[in-house]
Amino acid sequence: MATIRVLVVDDHVVFSDALATILRTEPEIEVVGKGGTVREAINSARALQPDVVLLDVHMPDGSGIEAVAAIKKDRPETQVVILTSDEDESVLRSAVQAGVTGYLSKHESAAQVVQAVRSAARGEALIAPYMLARLLHGLQKKDEPGPATPLTKRELEVLRELSLGHDNEAVATALRMSPNTVRTHVQNILSKLKVHSKLEAVSRGIREGWIRISQEPAA
Image 1 (cartoon, one colour):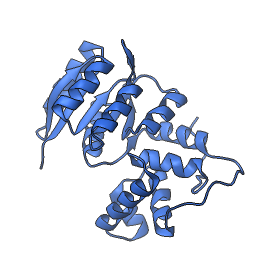
Image 2: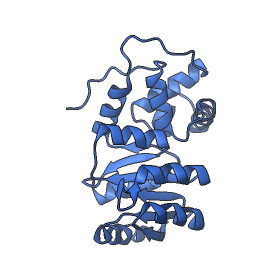
Image 3: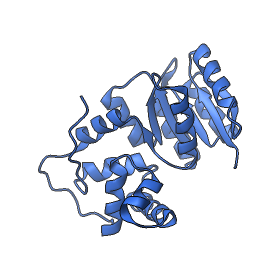
Image 4: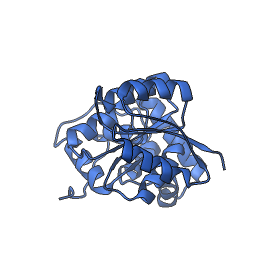
């Protein structure tokens, strides 16, 4: 298994040290650096070229969302996971639009954070289910027609499955196709929509009215 190179950026040193210690116990994860500001996040990501950046939103010199946009512009293949205590829907939406792969609360377990790193390294979106429901229902239009979709019928089916929080394996099972075929569809979706992540693709699909969700929003 290839080593996952991780950069941890959080201005709370005790938290970042503890998180780095937890990650280092995983044999396939290497913590290549740490930081505590937006500037350090951008510069370290550029210099160290990590596979995954774990990033807080609120920093002394600005918003982590600014760092997400800069990191994705410099190196689109770097996956960024927001790990924060801020669960505001508008912050979540801005993070998704900036290109994050995952968005987790600091209240999640250490095991969930490790899973997020592994998922992000595979390009899989990971977001707490209740936060995903709030995001998607907040984006969904009522009756407004959207522009014509550039996606094929099969790609839309894949996008609908992704909107349920499913990973590639679950999508493959639900749609009775191979994981490799799902990956190809996902790559085509990201390319056609000109987005960085599955979360951003799902958000675009719902915002434009190409897919709809029927679940009740989380309380």
